[in-house]
Image (cartoon, rainbow, N blue to C red; front, side, top):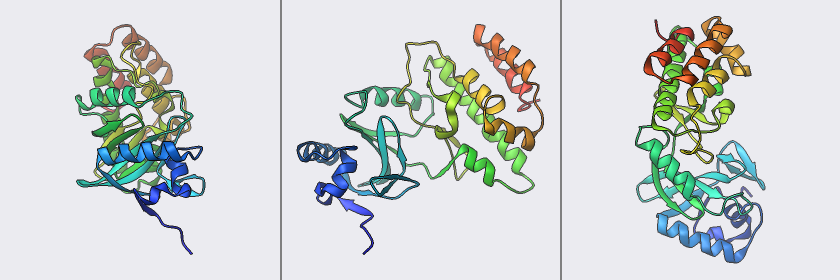
Amino acid sequence: MQSTKVASLSLLQDEKYATILCYPKYDSEETMKRIRQLERLGVAAVHFIGGKKAFGLSVLGKGHVGIVVIANTKTGQAALKIRRVDADRKRMQHEAEMLAKANTLGIGPRLIGKEKDFLLMELIDGSLLPDWIACLKGRNARNRIRNVLLDILEQCYKLDQAGLDHGELSRAPKHIIVDTLDKPKIVDFETASVMRRTSNVTSIAQYLFMKSQLAKILCHRLGHIDQKALVAKLRTYKHRSTRQNFDIILETCKLIQ
Protein backbone atom coordinates (compact mmCIF):
# COMPACT_ATOMS: atom_id res chain seq x y z
CA MET A 1 0.00 0.00 0.00
CA GLN A 2 1.30 3.46 -0.91
CA SER A 3 2.16 5.60 2.09
CA THR A 4 0.14 8.72 2.83
CA LYS A 5 1.75 11.84 1.35
CA VAL A 6 -0.44 14.38 3.16
CA ALA A 7 -0.65 14.25 6.95
CA SER A 8 -3.14 16.22 9.02
CA LEU A 9 -2.04 17.50 12.43
CA SER A 10 -3.67 14.52 14.11
CA LEU A 11 -1.84 12.13 11.79
CA LEU A 12 1.44 13.88 12.55
CA GLN A 13 1.27 12.33 16.00
CA ASP A 14 2.00 8.97 14.37
CA GLU A 15 5.66 8.09 14.95
CA LYS A 16 6.27 7.69 11.20
CA TYR A 17 5.54 11.38 10.62
CA ALA A 18 6.45 12.70 14.06
CA THR A 19 10.04 11.59 13.45
CA ILE A 20 10.21 14.26 10.75
CA LEU A 21 8.51 16.79 13.01
CA CYS A 22 11.19 16.06 15.66
CA TYR A 23 13.96 15.07 13.26
CA PRO A 24 16.14 13.10 13.74
CA LYS A 25 14.67 11.39 16.83
CA TYR A 26 11.04 10.73 17.75
CA ASP A 27 9.83 12.18 21.02
CA SER A 28 6.12 12.05 21.87
CA GLU A 29 6.19 15.00 24.27
CA GLU A 30 8.16 17.17 21.84
CA THR A 31 5.79 16.15 19.05
CA MET A 32 2.78 17.51 20.92
CA LYS A 33 4.59 20.76 21.73
CA ARG A 34 5.38 21.21 18.05
CA ILE A 35 1.86 20.37 16.90
CA ARG A 36 0.55 23.14 19.16
CA GLN A 37 2.99 25.52 17.48
CA LEU A 38 1.69 24.44 14.08
CA GLU A 39 -1.86 25.13 15.25
CA ARG A 40 -0.84 28.68 16.19
CA LEU A 41 0.73 29.13 12.74
CA GLY A 42 -2.51 28.04 11.08
CA VAL A 43 -1.02 24.89 9.55
CA ALA A 44 -3.66 22.25 8.81
CA ALA A 45 -1.58 19.55 7.15
CA VAL A 46 1.89 18.71 5.86
CA HIS A 47 2.80 17.30 2.43
CA PHE A 48 5.62 14.77 2.30
CA ILE A 49 6.78 15.35 -1.26
CA GLY A 50 10.02 16.65 -2.72
CA GLY A 51 13.45 15.72 -3.99
CA LYS A 52 15.06 14.82 -0.64
CA LYS A 53 14.48 11.90 1.72
CA ALA A 54 14.24 11.76 5.50
CA PHE A 55 13.54 8.35 7.05
CA GLY A 56 11.94 7.23 3.81
CA LEU A 57 9.63 10.24 3.51
CA SER A 58 10.02 12.83 0.76
CA VAL A 59 10.75 16.42 1.79
CA LEU A 60 11.64 19.63 -0.03
CA GLY A 61 14.94 20.11 1.74
CA LYS A 62 17.17 18.80 4.51
CA GLY A 63 20.03 20.68 6.16
CA HIS A 64 22.02 21.04 9.36
CA VAL A 65 19.40 23.25 10.96
CA GLY A 66 16.10 22.10 9.54
CA ILE A 67 13.81 20.06 7.34
CA VAL A 68 11.64 21.87 4.78
CA VAL A 69 8.22 20.57 3.78
CA ILE A 70 5.05 21.94 2.17
CA ALA A 71 2.30 22.99 4.56
CA ASN A 72 -1.40 23.58 3.98
CA THR A 73 -2.70 26.79 5.55
CA LYS A 74 -5.94 28.76 5.37
CA THR A 75 -4.38 31.06 2.78
CA GLY A 76 -2.86 28.30 0.64
CA GLN A 77 0.32 26.26 0.53
CA ALA A 78 3.52 27.50 2.15
CA ALA A 79 7.05 26.30 2.86
CA LEU A 80 7.50 25.11 6.44
CA LYS A 81 10.99 24.91 7.91
CA ILE A 82 11.18 22.56 10.90
CA ARG A 83 14.02 23.04 13.38
CA ARG A 84 15.94 19.82 13.96
CA VAL A 85 16.07 18.83 17.63
CA ASP A 86 19.85 18.41 17.28
CA ALA A 87 20.37 21.80 15.60
CA ASP A 88 23.07 24.10 16.93
CA ARG A 89 20.41 26.70 17.82
CA LYS A 90 17.50 26.51 20.24
CA ARG A 91 14.98 28.52 18.25
CA MET A 92 14.28 29.95 14.78
CA GLN A 93 14.11 33.56 15.95
CA HIS A 94 17.40 34.70 14.40
CA GLU A 95 16.63 33.34 10.94
CA ALA A 96 13.15 34.88 11.10
CA GLU A 97 14.66 38.29 11.92
CA MET A 98 17.21 38.05 9.11
CA LEU A 99 14.59 36.95 6.57
CA ALA A 100 12.25 39.72 7.67
CA LYS A 101 15.03 42.27 7.12
CA ALA A 102 15.71 40.82 3.66
CA ASN A 103 11.99 41.03 2.90
CA THR A 104 12.08 44.80 3.50
CA LEU A 105 14.48 44.93 0.53
CA GLY A 106 12.21 42.75 -1.63
CA ILE A 107 14.58 39.80 -1.21
CA GLY A 108 13.93 36.20 -0.17
CA PRO A 109 10.72 34.21 0.28
CA ARG A 110 8.08 36.19 2.17
CA LEU A 111 8.02 35.39 5.88
CA ILE A 112 4.48 34.38 6.85
CA GLY A 113 4.90 33.34 10.46
CA LYS A 114 7.31 32.00 13.06
CA GLU A 115 7.36 29.89 16.19
CA LYS A 116 10.19 28.59 18.34
CA ASP A 117 10.71 25.53 16.13
CA PHE A 118 9.21 26.64 12.81
CA LEU A 119 9.37 29.19 10.03
CA LEU A 120 6.41 29.51 7.67
CA MET A 121 7.38 31.11 4.37
CA GLU A 122 6.23 31.74 0.84
CA LEU A 123 6.45 28.56 -1.24
CA ILE A 124 8.56 29.23 -4.33
CA ASP A 125 7.62 27.26 -7.44
CA GLY A 126 10.90 26.95 -9.29
CA SER A 127 14.27 25.25 -9.69
CA LEU A 128 17.67 25.65 -8.07
CA LEU A 129 19.83 27.95 -10.18
CA PRO A 130 22.19 25.27 -11.62
CA ASP A 131 19.23 23.06 -12.60
CA TRP A 132 17.41 26.01 -14.16
CA ILE A 133 20.45 26.90 -16.29
CA ALA A 134 21.05 23.28 -17.29
CA CYS A 135 17.49 22.88 -18.56
CA LEU A 136 17.33 26.22 -20.35
CA LYS A 137 17.15 25.98 -24.13
CA GLY A 138 16.01 28.10 -27.05
CA ARG A 139 17.14 31.20 -28.89
CA ASN A 140 16.50 33.49 -25.92
CA ALA A 141 18.32 31.34 -23.35
CA ARG A 142 21.44 33.51 -23.22
CA ASN A 143 19.48 36.69 -22.53
CA ARG A 144 17.36 34.96 -19.90
CA ILE A 145 20.50 33.73 -18.11
CA ARG A 146 22.06 37.19 -18.22
CA ASN A 147 18.90 38.80 -16.84
CA VAL A 148 18.71 36.32 -13.96
CA LEU A 149 22.39 36.73 -13.08
CA LEU A 150 22.02 40.52 -13.19
CA ASP A 151 19.03 40.29 -10.85
CA ILE A 152 20.98 38.06 -8.43
CA LEU A 153 23.89 40.49 -8.29
CA GLU A 154 21.55 43.46 -7.85
CA GLN A 155 19.91 41.69 -4.89
CA CYS A 156 23.34 41.01 -3.40
CA TYR A 157 24.26 44.68 -3.80
CA LYS A 158 21.08 45.65 -1.91
CA LEU A 159 22.02 43.25 0.88
CA ASP A 160 25.52 44.73 1.05
CA GLN A 161 24.15 48.26 1.24
CA ALA A 162 21.74 47.23 4.00
CA GLY A 163 24.53 45.61 6.03
CA LEU A 164 22.99 42.12 5.87
CA ASP A 165 25.47 39.37 5.03
CA HIS A 166 23.88 36.12 3.83
CA GLY A 167 26.93 34.06 4.72
CA GLU A 168 26.47 31.15 2.30
CA LEU A 169 26.62 32.67 -1.18
CA SER A 170 30.07 31.32 -1.95
CA ARG A 171 28.27 27.95 -1.87
CA ALA A 172 25.17 29.13 -3.68
CA PRO A 173 23.81 26.03 -5.51
CA LYS A 174 21.26 25.38 -2.74
CA HIS A 175 20.55 29.01 -1.91
CA ILE A 176 19.10 30.47 -5.11
CA ILE A 177 15.82 29.34 -6.65
CA VAL A 178 14.61 30.67 -10.01
CA ASP A 179 10.81 30.74 -10.17
CA THR A 180 8.56 30.15 -13.17
CA LEU A 181 8.72 33.86 -14.09
CA ASP A 182 12.56 33.83 -14.20
CA LYS A 183 12.75 35.67 -10.87
CA PRO A 184 15.68 34.48 -8.71
CA LYS A 185 15.02 34.14 -4.99
CA ILE A 186 17.81 34.01 -2.42
CA VAL A 187 16.82 31.60 0.36
CA ASP A 188 18.16 30.16 3.64
CA PHE A 189 19.09 33.10 5.86
CA GLU A 190 19.91 30.85 8.82
CA THR A 191 23.56 31.96 8.99
CA ALA A 192 22.91 35.56 7.93
CA SER A 193 24.23 38.37 10.11
CA VAL A 194 24.15 42.14 10.47
CA MET A 195 27.19 42.01 12.77
CA ARG A 196 29.92 41.04 10.28
CA ARG A 197 31.26 42.74 7.18
CA THR A 198 29.11 42.03 4.16
CA SER A 199 30.50 39.99 1.26
CA ASN A 200 27.39 39.14 -0.75
CA VAL A 201 28.52 40.60 -4.09
CA THR A 202 32.06 39.28 -3.85
CA SER A 203 30.90 35.82 -2.74
CA ILE A 204 28.26 35.40 -5.45
CA ALA A 205 30.52 36.79 -8.19
CA GLN A 206 33.25 34.31 -7.27
CA TYR A 207 30.74 31.46 -7.25
CA LEU A 208 29.10 32.39 -10.56
CA PHE A 209 32.17 33.31 -12.55
CA MET A 210 35.26 31.78 -10.92
CA LYS A 211 35.13 29.02 -8.32
CA SER A 212 32.45 26.50 -9.22
CA GLN A 213 31.30 23.95 -11.73
CA LEU A 214 28.55 26.39 -12.64
CA ALA A 215 31.21 28.97 -13.57
CA LYS A 216 32.50 26.60 -16.23
CA ILE A 217 28.98 26.11 -17.58
CA LEU A 218 28.33 29.84 -17.64
CA CYS A 219 31.59 30.42 -19.49
CA HIS A 220 30.35 28.02 -22.17
CA ARG A 221 26.86 29.56 -22.28
CA LEU A 222 27.79 33.25 -22.05
CA GLY A 223 31.42 33.48 -23.15
CA HIS A 224 34.79 33.95 -21.45
CA ILE A 225 35.19 36.42 -18.60
CA ASP A 226 38.57 37.83 -17.63
CA GLN A 227 38.91 36.36 -14.14
CA LYS A 228 42.06 38.30 -13.33
CA ALA A 229 40.27 41.56 -14.11
CA LEU A 230 37.25 40.44 -12.09
CA VAL A 231 39.41 39.71 -9.05
CA ALA A 232 40.84 43.23 -9.25
CA LYS A 233 37.37 44.81 -9.54
CA LEU A 234 36.06 42.75 -6.63
CA ARG A 235 39.01 43.83 -4.51
CA THR A 236 38.25 47.48 -5.30
CA TYR A 237 34.57 46.97 -4.48
CA LYS A 238 35.42 45.25 -1.20
CA HIS A 239 37.46 48.28 -0.21
CA ARG A 240 34.77 50.76 -1.32
CA SER A 241 31.31 49.34 -2.02
CA THR A 242 29.95 52.15 -4.17
CA ARG A 243 27.40 51.87 -6.96
CA GLN A 244 30.08 52.91 -9.44
CA ASN A 245 32.41 50.09 -8.37
CA PHE A 246 29.50 47.65 -8.44
CA ASP A 247 28.59 48.68 -12.00
CA ILE A 248 32.19 48.04 -13.06
CA ILE A 249 31.81 44.47 -11.75
CA LEU A 250 28.64 44.06 -13.85
CA GLU A 251 30.53 45.31 -16.91
CA THR A 252 33.44 42.96 -16.23
CA CYS A 253 30.96 40.05 -16.00
CA LYS A 254 29.40 41.23 -19.30
CA LEU A 255 25.99 41.69 -17.71
CA ILE A 256 25.71 45.35 -18.74
CA GLN A 257 27.42 47.39 -21.41
